[in-house]
Structure formats: C-alpha cells, structure tokens
Image 1 (cartoon, helix red, strand yellow):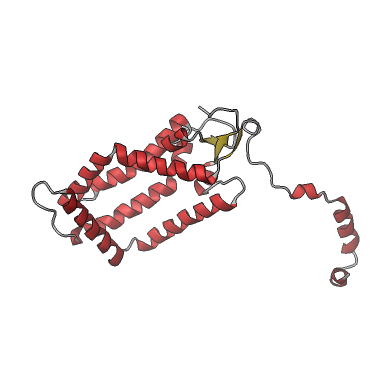
Image 2 (tube, rainbow, N blue to C red):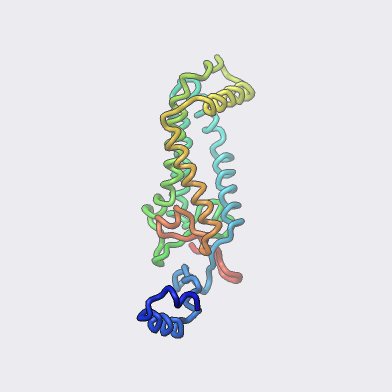
Length: 231
C-alpha cells in the first residue's frame, strides 16, 4: 500500500490492530437528549421554531401596539431614546420571563414546543436570561445607534400627528440610519454575524441547538406523537 511507504514500520502493527478492533458504530453522533426526555421528546423542527418566533413577534406587536406607538412619538418629540429603548428591551425580557415560568415563549407554547435543560432540571431565571443575551446585546447596540441619530431627524409635527406623518418621520429616520456613520457600527455588525452564525448552527447541527442553546445548556424540543407538552 502507498500509505505503508510513508509510515514507520513500528507504527504499522499498532495501526492494523486498532483498525481490526474499531467499531464503526462509534461514528454515530451521541444522543443529545437527556435520558428522561428521550422516550417522549425529540428535537424541535426548524419550521416549528421559526413559526414560534413569528408568533412571538406578532403577540408583542398586537399587545403593545399602542404603547409602542406612544414610545415612538415620545422618542421623536423629545429627541430621547429612552421610551423607544424601553419598548425594545421589553421584548427579550418578556421572552425570558415566559421561558422561566412556562419553559416556553408564547409562540412555543402555542405550537407545543418547550425549552429544556440538558441536565434534566427545570429552567430557572438565570437559564432563561442567558438565552436572551444575544437579543439583548443586539437591542442595546441598536438603541445606542438610534440615540446618535436622533439629533439629525426633522422636528416632530406639532399637535397630534397623523399615522402618515409618524410613518414618514420613521422612514426618514431609517434612511438616515443607513447612511450616517456610527461608532457602534462595528459592534452592530459583529452582533449581526453572531446572530447569523446562530441560525446556521440551528440548521446544520443534528440537535438544532443555536448559540443561545449552547451557552445556556438548553435545548428546544417537541413532543413525540401521543405525548403532551412539558409544563
């Protein structure tokens, strides 16, 4: 064999013995579910996780539509990022609270998928908050970026503005944010790359674990047919 020409003779017997004893079944991926979860649960599918995220966003927009509109108006009128930042930060905080209390967000709860710990214990508030570290970082950097741009936007309309006027001001704000330089841009891009990398991990990993799953020691699962959701 060609390989034998490049290997020392003392290595060949050891290599041949190792190949004879090698069990190809060892190449299979290790199971990632905990023993008590395996009989009733499996890794949540990508479409369920994506659908749950969409439902979470819809729930937030519908429930907090009026407060969000007031926050946008207050931010533009006073040139103060505080009200809008509070609404932006509310979303990941609520996600953490729901995950802590229900082991799932609203969208996950509706689709019967849950977040479980790999060490087979109920998630506490620390676990739930760790899962929101990346969303919180993205929101904070976004708010810092917007705070830089507020002095550049036109004055807020006097009196009670129409929805069209608020939308026009928001569109102008978005246009400025795409063209003006920022000292936070590099960090924003880095957090965006982390977010995309997290999505890629969820696609390519057999257990569908994203970055937030890995560093919090959790996993998103769905019930096997005939079993109910974790409570």
